[in-house]
Length: 211
Image (cartoon, rainbow, N blue to C red; front, side):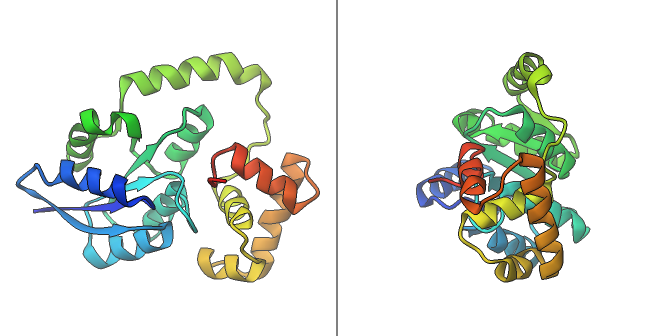
């Protein structure tokens, strides 16, 4: 029996995903998480084979969930669900160890195929998604900044936008306060920003948080 963990902060989305997963007799929903930190804890506790996680999760986004699970050396694959068409997001997902990526609007049609692929050790990205992102990349590559934020810096920016202090971020990310401050300063320098308000606006614009 394969264990599937569902992580999304909206109950109606979790319910819809559960209904799809439970159509397969050899799959079981091992648990449901409402934020990224809970998703990591439940994945470890239930020894989930697959974690389906919304990119825009509180406390820890889908990419940070994937990176944390990889750091724990678990044999758990992550399937990111997103509403956002952003080529930077896909690039960051691959760097974070994500091997499955799906638009929420495609979940009803492609979710089972995506999970089957990940269980077989194959990556899963719908052709329409890849074509869209490649097209966007070609259009935007000349205007893209070479100074993209790292996944860790993005996590710090997200938590800042959610109202966390440096100390609470250090607990969530399991980093020292000094390291958090370093990532914060690095993100602000790369983005050319000098205030928390600017970081919050950036986080909203990049869909790291929902206003």
